[in-house]
Image 1 (cartoon, rainbow, N blue to C red):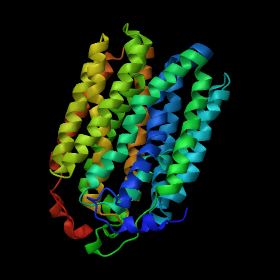
Image 2: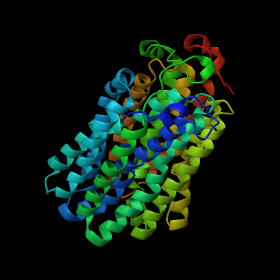
Image 3: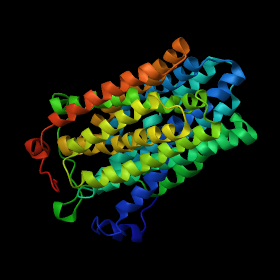
Image 4: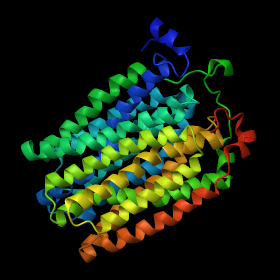
Length: 422
């Protein structure tokens, strides 16, 4: 869509001005993320576990494999999507990916008692998933902001928090009134009717200009250089462990709580609370990232998440489940800010989306493993407790690796001048 004169004037305002065009990109990206893969698919998947099992007689492990297959496709496709984003810009990638994703979710309304059909759809939405998630939108945001990048990313990632608050409750309500098929149709339609028009109208990169005008030139390491640094692999290792733990916990949260006597409505409320705390985590972590050293913030966030998973392992009533969900949500929200923020600080923008896509490969592989191994643990032992306890301990240990990351100024000569360093 053509740029209007009003849009053009807003390009030259500062980041602190609410009329700055970058904030319009933020709002559109926030709502796009809310109805994209990382929110709509991830946070509603668990709500459909029991309805699908009851309808078709599938085990939880079998259904969870669908999530795993989607996550594996995200892992396989994310580097290519990242390279395409660096080369062609976000809008040309987001629009077709969002179209395929929304249609794929809606098509689950036509699901028949064939696991291959369910798996094929999950593979399809996973293949385009990160083209309709914050990986794609973060590329655009990072060209519009530097001093307020943490806050801008937090606002974008807040879309996932809003989705986690609203979409599971909406899906549960539609399932209760009209069935799970209608719920899938409603969710797919939301993706198409909200994500596509807003992205088409507002989401674009800002072309590099002089430093005095504010935006950041696309300087920094090549992706091959980034892969040779130890700080990149620290980020990846911690992200991998957190993904196994958080995605497994989130996917089975509703089923775990109902197994322990919590009502379906109460379980949906806990998932919604997880979304609310994820939203709060995004805002608070984004705010502190612009003011304090990001690695230390990451250490605290991941440690809180480990505490939430440990609490969930022993949750036996709604209050404990809600508290556990709240802590896990802080981690889910904060992690979404931390990873892209640290990548821009350590590696610059030259190959930002490619490196971000590579981290997503490891995140998604771990995300595929988490729900499946928890499903297998339950099917084998009838309990999630032992494995959740082990995952909490592993995440607590991994979080300590963040304290080994160097200060930004120690690598600034490799990525260009680092402005606004806390």
